[in-house]
Image 1 (spheres, rainbow, N blue to C red):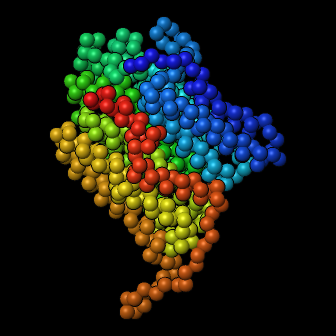
Image 2: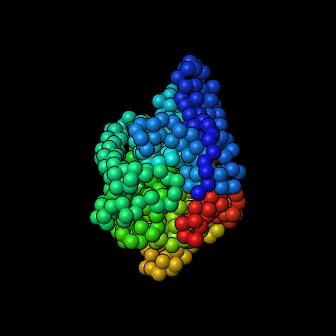
Length: 504
């Protein structure tokens, strides 16, 4: 590993979203438009700062800054390594688009939403740039409480219940994580850092002790990663939250748990120790169960956002399955899916928001002919939905191809059966939405001969450009990143650097 260079840029990236928060608080209520544009400029500046680090990261450089020392060998430190930078780039980009979308979607009078949105971005970037598990835990827990107001924003009974359930799950998970970190610190000779690939060893502790550490980490991070049966908060939180918050919950916040598991597998245990302990068998089993069962549950949901929520539960476990393969292509596909899923599901949730704003419809059964009322939105929805099934040349196809290749490298072709079942189930719950949108019309009548008569089509006007532009950008990237995956800054260019070291 290369020596880290001191830099204030990681800290600047973490602090910049607070400028948006201060702008919200400082400017008078009558300056609504100015406050909103300052929020957007804050998210744009944050993305720009993160993007400025790309050339150095691609060259193999790392950047670090120490924030505080708690006790000896226990400190808060930010470090930009390749893996953390990859996650930060996904966070900053999706947050910027969600901020643009929120400018039109959220009532301007609700300063609280934008304030906590900015705060939560700061904490998410803190997670991405954490140099050790202690720092990650601090930002991870602050992110939990920062995201709670986003879920309950609409203050309905459903939103309050969903928020309460989220807190119960998250606080319980935080307690488990705290135990895991203490055990890791004790049995790992005080080594909590992410500076190498595998710091724990059977030389430090017994097999039982290390397995305890692993499974407590898996349980703690598994709540945010929505691994079944720890997923219970997700189907309630997504429909209750405003659509931009749902996009961030699915696209980024669920990934905070998955990214924690990536750090545990790569940086804490390492591939060799995972093989020795054979814990990957349990991890793969849980991932396969989650992928299939969540997809089956998605089939039964009429509420669009609830169907998308169950879809997210299954899709995030692709990441876990890729890690559990302990093979080059499996790990590559799994970690790349962190960004791929963010693009696809971010697009789908934002499309659901446009549908709600323009038509007031939440249920799929009510959406007949909506493809003609909102053609751009539903075309983008269809692109992302087809990508979720693994249709080439999308990012979803890249993920499934690499995971399939990884399963063969691992000598476990049974995983291909799981991936095929998932693809078929994805088709079963996404294709009917596309069919209803474009091939069914509201007011259809069937005569005595069984022939369907359509009413005259009514072509609607698309939503405000602040809602449509982020949707179009994400839909375009779903295809572009799938075709030109080798472009510097795209997932492959960053993830391959890490995976090639771990699985040479």
